[in-house]
Image (cartoon, rainbow, N blue to C red):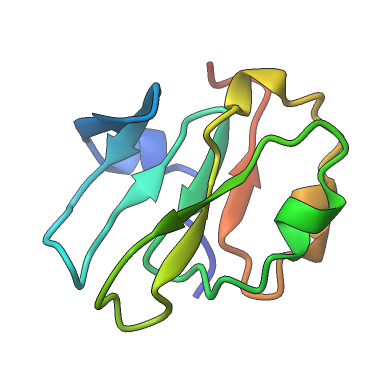
Length: 106
């Protein structure tokens, strides 16, 4: 199941992490929500493939540890989402469709 492209309408901001919003629900360690707004990563389906980190030309993503999460124990966090140039490469390469980039969301 891919990230909900309308998460900003269907979820609420429940926290902040490294300067970006976290959209709930969050029930650690099983549910970690969606991190970011302009560049959003669904932590619940991110499988830590790492191709988004490798391919992003402006280094939007950083690894973050997520101990005991059932999918993977690290995630690609959009820690530098303000640097995003809307190239959509991360969206195109994510094997589980965990990333959404929307220039209308800020």
